[in-house]
Structure formats: C-alpha cells, structure tokens
Length: 409
Image (tube, rainbow, N blue to C red; front, side, top):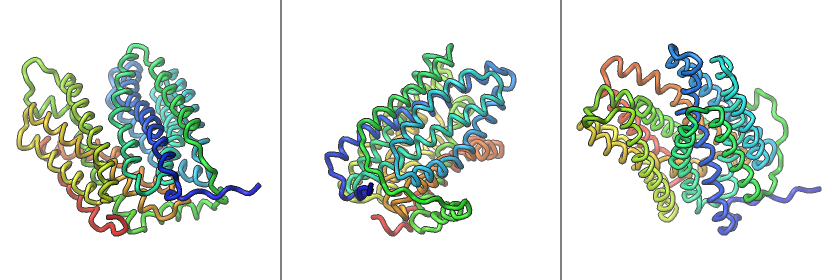
C-alpha cells in the first residue's frame, strides 16, 4: 500500500497545532520530572546508602558516566527514529520502558550496578526524548514554532519542580520514588501518542555506519546550524558551571541571614528561578512568533544571562543572590524557548530532523559533563568571583554567536 505524503509544517492546520502544544508540554514536563527527580534527589540518596564515606566521588562517577553515555546515545536514538519514519512508537516505547528501567535502578545495591542501570535508564529516555524533540520541526508550522518551543521549554521549570517534590516525598522509600517517576513518563507517553496522531513519513533506507558518522559530523559543517550549536554550548556551559556549585557558593561566598542554612537557601532560590523561567519561556516564545524575530530574543536573553552572572560579583549578598536567581531564570527560560525555535528553522534536511536535533542535544549534555571539572579548576585558582565572571563571559560569547546566523531573522 502506498504511503500518504507527509505534510510539511506549513500544511499543518493551526487547530491541530494548538491541540499539540498541551501534549508537548505534558510530555516534556514528565521527562524533566524524571531527569531532575532522579539526578537531584533519588540517585544521591541511593548512592549515599550504598557507601556513605565515598558518596561524593561515587555520585560524580555515576553521573559523569551516564552523562557521557546520554550525550552520544541521543543522536543515535534520533537517527533510528528518522529511519523508521515514525515518532509516536519511539515515544511510547521509551515511556513504557522507563518503568522497567526505574524499577531496575531502584533494586540494585552496588555503585557499578547503579551506573549500569542509570545508563540503561538514559538509553530508554533518549529514545523518548529524541522522538519527542523532533515533533516540533515535523508537525508545527514555522509561524507557530515559538509557541511550540515555549510549550517544550515550560516543561523544564514545571517538570523540575514536580520531579524534585515527588522524589523528596519518597526520600525514605527511594525504590517507590523511582517507580513513581517512571510511571509519570509512561502515562505522559500514553497520553501523547493517543492524542497526537501522526502520518507516517517515508522510512529511510539503511545507511552504512561510516556514512552515518559522516552525516552526523556533516551537520556541524552547515553554517547556521554550527553557530546555533556554538551559542547553545557556550551559554549552557556558563549556566551549569555556576548553578552546579550553588550550594558551595552559598556556604563559602555569600553572607546569609542569621538562621538560614545553605540547603534552605537553595530551596528558596530554585522556585524563584523556576517562576521567572516559566514566565519568560511563554512570553519569549509567543513574542518571537508575533514579531517573527528569533535572533533578537536569543541574543538579548543570552546577554541578560551574562549580566545576571555579574550580580553576585557586585553584590555578594543574600539579596544579590535572590536578584541573580530571578534575572538568570528569566534569561535562561527565554533563551531555551526561542533558541529551540531558531534551531528548527536552520535544520539542513527535514527528513533528518531527529538526528540533527540529537546533535544539538550534545550542546546541552556536553557542557553539563564539562561544567563540574571546569568550575572546580576556576574555583581552585581564584575562588567564586572568577567563576561568576567566567560564566558571564561564556554567556556573552553565546549572545555574539547568534550574529553570524543568516537564515533566520
């Protein structure tokens, strides 16, 4: 039987797109709930119970190995999705497999097995993530990309809050916490695939491994995509180099009000950042659609992120940290929403969307691998003030990286 032609984004009815946005929000919220709930709460608790004396080193090892694995597995998962001509089966399969992966992760009791189980969890979640990420360039018209990217980006602050709160509720029963977060993803996958119908694209023929690697690297030779990749890499590295050391900054660099412990301060700063991030994600995405300007919003938000990182340098106080968290959340939310829309407009080939978006995800995951090592070296040399300055320089460089992009306003 002949396959129906795949609609181009411009052919997608607006009403269908509007129905898709809540599903994209739900799917991404569930994904970030699992990532943040596991990474921030459940995994540290589990590793501490296995070996309290070596918990810091073991957590760094497990998280680092899993991050490296996820960085290189995501484009592979995206390429398989492209080759099949489908997204929904991969979203559903990855979501359902997350339950089994989380059950396995909660049942192991050695650091080695935790690392293996979390890598398996990253594998199934990357099938889910790669296919879900490609829905925007597949099914959303260009004029609605900003709103769609806002729906995707809003999943980060909402999902992180849900994930951390859920995981914290099961701190004494982390196995149940793992299963609960796995079920959240499974339910989201079921709801998404039931509500977001897709027309099958023509499947791609099998490609020799050497050609796959060449194509994977070749996308970075595309002028606009390469500069978008560089800008994302720089901003994310600067952001996580500082945010990853936030607890130690509050312990050793900031004078807190009497009676406020550093861990309590983190619990206050996180929702402050999440609220402004959510607000700017929506506003940035919608306004970039209405004004049909992507580079402007991406450049300004990256620049604002750089400025925000200088606030604790000028004012190393609790008030300064509150302002920093609010402004940095505002900048980061807008950047991630509009930059995602921008990238979907500079993809070299629509039929390779999942693979190429997987390459872009390296600009998200790669800096998170490097950030702890880079930050520790900077702090070791000069303390926390140079760390903030370093992050600001990277963010401002990320803002400048948008300028050479030619195919998008």
